[in-house]
Amino acid sequence: MIDQNSKQSNAIYWASGIVSVCGIIFEVLFGAVGSYLLGDGVKQYTLTISLFLTGMGIGATISEKVTKNLILSFVWIEYLIGIIAGFSTFLLFGVTAYLSSGMDAFFLYSVTLIVGALTGVELPILIRKANDIGVTLKKSTARVLFSDYAGGLIGGLLFVYLLRPEFGLVKTAFLVAIINVAIALWILVYFRREFKRFKLHFSAGIFILLLLLSGVLFGEETAFTFEQKLYRDPIIYTDQTDYQQIILTKEQGDLRLFLDGQLQFSSSDEYRYHETLVHPTMASAQSHQKVLILGGGDGLALRELQKYEDIKKMTLVDLDPAVIDLAKTNRELTTLNEQAFEDERVEVRNEDAFLFLQKQQTTFYDVILVDLPDPNNESLNKLYTLEFYQLLRNHLAPGGSIMIQATSPTFATEVYWSIDQTVKAAQLQTENLHVDIPSFGDWGFILAKREDVNLNQIDISVETKFLTNELIDGLTSFGKDIDSEIIDENGEKVELETNTLMRPTIIEKYEKAWRSY
Image (cartoon, rainbow, N blue to C red; front, side, top):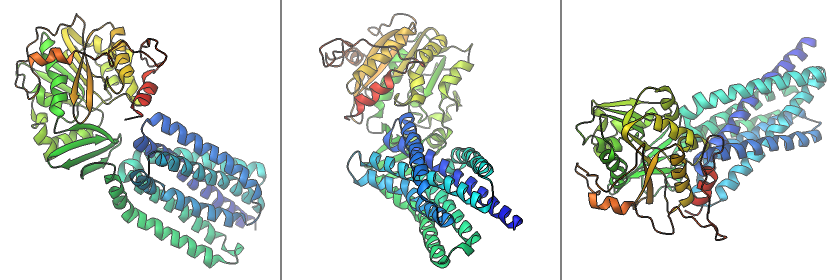
């Protein structure tokens, strides 16, 4: 009898550990899908983890009322988690595609709270069952909690290094839900002598298991049709990498690249952006021998740089190797970037731009192009801080020039001029430019040098489709409604703040500015 009790209690500990793995995976999965669909990764992870833990607290309270049929209650809780969490990301893509704005967030947060509550009911039930078997309350609680915490670590590692990169968000939810239901079926069979209607409960579990298996086989393809609704043009390529989701769309010759749902370029007008990024910077620099590009994994800035024969080396630093591989191998992209990565002068480094600059302590560049995504989360914010711009300054050769893409001065006026203020705080002189790009709208750049910036006498010496010497002067003119004299709703002048690692002031401003667009 003692041996049988020991086996049953061990089964409970194993079940606790495995469902805990599933619980932590769902927790971070909800944060990841929220980050992708709703933006601002730090905010979404914070909200989903908070809601999940709150749900667990609610579930723990509810569990007090579960005093009978403990194993059967556990089984059906796992069934419910399997159905709700398994179909969560699949349905969220549908909600985002077909329902009104805001419903996607409501759906995600509701599912997070519900799954958290169901997860919170699990452990007290298992502890109580272990106690009923004959394990002391002190011992059963300690062992179940150990299984839970150890399982949490395993779940987090599995999600980061295996599930998300290999299976994506939709298939991961179905696969993990299958594990929940499989554990429920195993426990059901292990304690089958306690049930009067064993076949009914077992059949229900098998049905749910088959439903989830169909989700694994066909859910991602269906979710892809939902996702297609989020984009204007047909999707011709999609990939979930370790860092982001990459999507290419094309319609009537217009190729568009999206990273985590954010448009990076449209082939119909990207030359306006990239010519403005590259050529004023090259024209204002005394030398072109060494060029550094931070970001720009699509190769379009490299395409413009190839026009300068006096460049000896171009170093491109982009975190995600998958973007580089796509730009090297995808026929649509290689045609657009004119096979820029085949230039022998190009060196690619797949590193974080901030860390790259920290390591390259004695390397100086004549031209630095900062072609990075907008500062819409904590990870990207560090690339718009005083500390980052000080690193840029320290790697800029005398007479060299830096060009920074700095979001839209029309849509995010205070953010743009705050970035300019931050660059100046790094003891760099600046000149401000903006250009109309039909697919983006009005877009801003900041040209920075150690010396005073003078664009009046620069000469664009290479062939361009858009930019001319005469046009550059116009790019430096800002209307009264988008210039640095920003007046708030109370009629008072806004004091611009320097953005730092310790005080990331522009993230909230950025989110607020783009909320209406």
